[in-house]
Length: 50
Image (cartoon, rainbow, N blue to C red):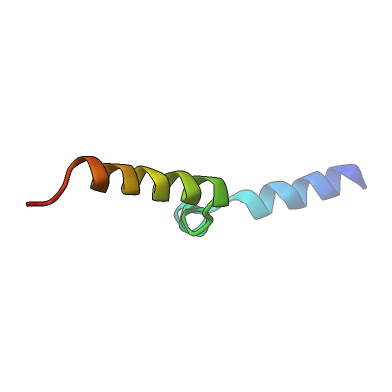
């Protein structure tokens, strides 16, 4: 029973990781988004565009 389950898990994990990586690139943390916005605001305030 357990061996069959483990075998199924291993078989499902094989393949290209590129698709899995693309899926994880879409995930964005709300904490990161907040920090990114604050950093961008700070940079724009400090380094005014001429």
